[in-house]
Length: 434
Image 1 (tube, rainbow, N blue to C red):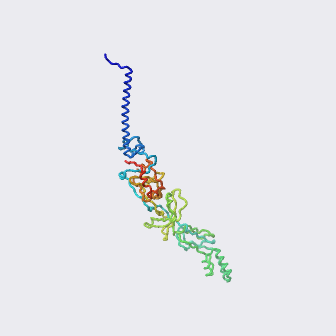
Image 2: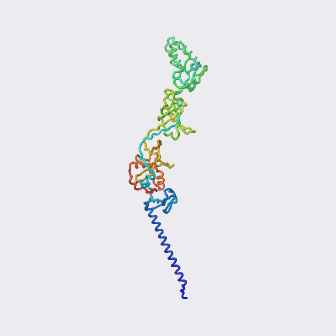
Image 3: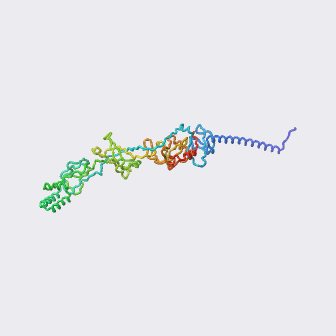
């Protein structure tokens, strides 16, 4: 046989050569695949306008991040690259203006105005204790007549309340008449002064002088008009000097005590106008002003009692009646925006500003009162700025994801003057929303 036999050295050399060829082929293949993946990544990033891609994500599930582009495992859409911000915080979110309408983003311009707010609470008609009169005798005696009065009766000023027999007055009056008969003017003046010191009213002294006869029975009348809220006399009883016989509380003006929730306590002030309606008088409006804000709150209902005075010339309003009260706070001019534009994060309050050409940026604001679908802006916005009123939560999520700077409250005045608008436009982050 003419078979060529290979030596062991030759066989070894042939095996090494084969392995080398296989390695070269594998390396070439991997290099080709790697270059193709890099090119694909680069093309996707270039289409998104990114020079450096941080990661890839699905806009519908932004919390999930991917290292490579491709199709989203969650939605039937391609992953979107998150562009690097160059180490600095980005100044805004920018989307294709053609997509603004598709995303349902609507804006509205801020303007100065007066918020017409009105708080409706409940109240109760109460006695006006400031108009209370206390009836007391100036000397001790005996009750002869009470004129049939009872507690809560309404009396007019000058109406008789009680007849008192005061024996001490009778003796003093007889002494005065005896001194006056002597013609001594000095003694007469001294005797008359004694009658005054005993508590005798001037009208009774004049009547004794004219008639020349002593009068020891006095009729005590109501000093003011109102309701008899306390009556402590009965026929035949004895009374002492300074004893309270009756209390009369005025009904005009009358009090309206309003229970204001603690959260709205800052919106009331002394002198503020209140309007009340009562079921007893449908269609009739009673107007008054707040005179007192009580210093303590009701612990069980967490309400603050506010006291107002209402005119009551015809005594139509009676203590104990319930009223529906409207409080009109002080009118003040402020920047107004739609309430739906406000984003409450729990730590602060934000709105999304429109910067034109599809650019948006979050701004911190301090809000005031809210009514009729509008909210007062105490600080953080200037008149004429545009805020997002629909779709703002999508933009806020995108801004949070991209680390967008929130415009501080103090920057509102500068933004309202239109300064640095070009700088803000050039610094927006381009974030494609699919």
